[in-house]
Length: 462
Image (tube, one colour):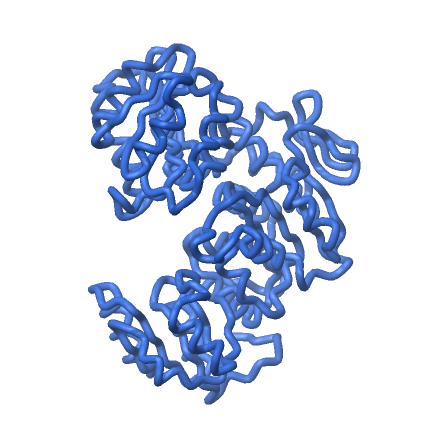
């Protein structure tokens, strides 16, 4: 494994905090480099036990079931993104003065390839997936990795010097970088989220801004022209700024005009070529195209990748269509901003919303009216959602997903949509947003029966 950053790993004591996907990958990579690795993990479930055994067999020391704060001596700590900065283990490392990196910093130190990084409160996964498809279509050795699922540490070890990784990076990961420098950085949007982890919106936005901290004048920064926070970052970004827009065609960037997507005075493709529903899908596609074109992917490859794209599940994924009503799974919408984005470009929406609010004010969901014509509220946040919409439009409460879909079907109009876009986390009722989306799909299919006109097109958006 090549390590171009100049770090020396043999016999270096590294503490890996957290044994999730990224921590597990980081520990394996460090062991291969000859580091002395100790892993500490708060949990002790079956998966943690399996991973611990594999790492112990490879030479690591692994602690499960809690963090022993008296045994944190290390030259460096790799912090998993789920570990909050105000946690006991993070605070103890801070008091000791231990250098702390996120997994993306470690991946950057190990990489030979370039990084094209995307962050934002919503839309990251779809944008990254499409960007990776554009890089691949352009003949560039590439992969999508990071917060999208595949650990960056694992991905970068497979890519050569002429390769590029499309990296989905979160505020958690950006908070603990040092040298991480993407050749292309994209900020899709910055809205209130994860304030429980960061402590305040100001700190959350500051973590997002770190995506440009180490860029150079030859690099590119693509902010969303419609997002004030993203454009505010542009004023301080050291890279070349190329704004993107779904509303206009900025002269020095990429955007939409006259039904087409324009790049530097040339129409690259028509908006109708984008197989993603609504304004959100258009915005993600424009951002991905801008990042690919800035990096040097030829326009024809960008067009081919866009036309053939099918986004990940649970991201504005069309599940079925019947009697002029489209059933859409946007379970990945775990904050109100994502839901506000999801309804743009749709008509006559019956919205299924609710779950665990994470302390975020849900009253902003009232701005979905119109196009939302009725709401089905679920989960812990149901009473707050009912209060938000009461007196505006019909709002009903459902005890579970099956009842929610049944009520939504009764209220739906043609043409229109039944949209699961909860605006809340899923952990009050489900193990994760994916399981919530799967249950929605099952409930829709059960409600619609075996009608031959139903479709499962697998389209999605962030």
